[in-house]
Amino acid sequence: MSEIRIRTVSWLVRQIAFSVDREPSLHNVVLEGEVFNFTAHSSGHWYFSLKDEHASIRAIMWENDNLLVSFQPREGDRIRVLGDVKIYQAGGTMQLVVRKMAIAGAGDLKAKFDALYKKLENEGLFSVDHKKPLPHYPMNIGLVTGRETHARADVLNTLGRRWPVAEIFEYPVLVQGNRASADIVQALKRADGAGHDVILLCRGGGSQEDLWCFNDELLARTIYAMKTPLVTGVGHEPDWTMVDYVADLRAPTPTGAAERCSPDIHKVYEHLEEQRHRILVLCDDRLKEARMQLDDLSGRAVFENPLEMFSQRRLKKELLKHRLLGELGSLTAELKAELSSRRELLSMHAATRIRESRRTLKETEDEMIRLLDQRLLEEERSLRQKAGLLDAYSPLKILERGYAVVSKNDTAVSDAEELKKGDRITVRLHRGSAEAEIQSVHKGD
View 1 (cartoon, rainbow, N blue to C red):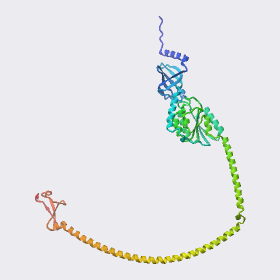
View 2: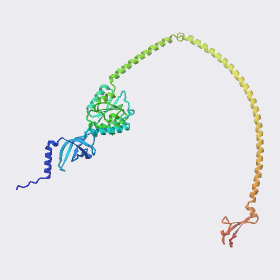
View 3: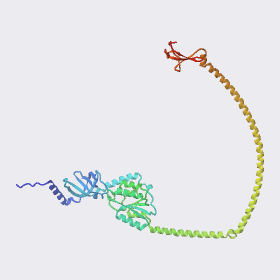
View 4: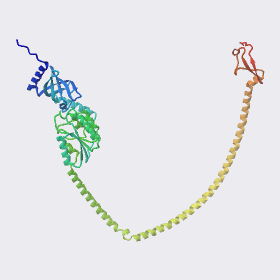
């Protein structure tokens, strides 16, 4: 019997891994399943599992691959992935290394899009009243697009051809992948605060998944809050994303966006030339009209013999001056006579009123003195009556009849209960007082 060869666990796992790597059917595998146990690690890698009704498999997607995915999967999402089956030798486990990922079917993306569209529409983010007008001649344009992309080249070529006088400020961003929407939000905020006349947000064509970052809710709300007019040119003519509905103007392509926000400089030159010609014609007409007015005025008498007209005007002025002085003299004499008459009449009335006032004042003074004397007599009589009553009820009258007031410690005593043998008391008489000591106390009536 031959000797049994014992293998190590590592050898077995390596053999399985080698076999899996050599099997063509386990490479570029396309799977569809439901996501569970999803984790977005701080390293940027995604760890999750795919399952169907009967089985599940672990999966990993490296950061450099998931950056190109326009969404981040959640628990329960149904997705379609492409990847290779690998054996993780340290753990002896099988896993799928995913290179590409998409939502399983367009229906799920459309449902998400429709739900967000309805939500934002109900909040008024698509209202025409909120859209800002574009400037006719923008001299400062902000461009938010991918770095070194066809869309960027198309926009710059179009602006250079149509409106080369404008200054272009670029904000390169990611235009695809799960981090693209956040990158675009930051770029738009910087551009909005930079004082541009208009801002372009552009991206070339792509699949629904490629353009999905432009359907982000935060991105839509950022555009709605912007102060600077925004023109979008995302994808092609049939492609509508959420940013197109919120933007102030939507163009079907990046080139269209550049055309919509810029005038054609050749047409501007033509328009300026037309305006220049029109101004020259108007100036010529005004000069002709002014010459006719000048000819008409130069034929008038004032310009033919101005000294004669001045002499006539001076004579007329002297005549009016003498007439005015005469009328002023007559009027002054009349006013003086009237004033003298009124002064005499006023003096007579004033003397009469003074005599009457003095008589009335004397009568009033006599009446007041009479009333005061009468009131003094009444008050004196009342005072005597009250003094008599006060004297009748005075305690001194009682003391005068032989009574006395007993006090102890400056307090009047009215009851023998308040005294005891040996107390010092004060006896107040009608005239003077005496100090005494209590020898005995008799209580009761």
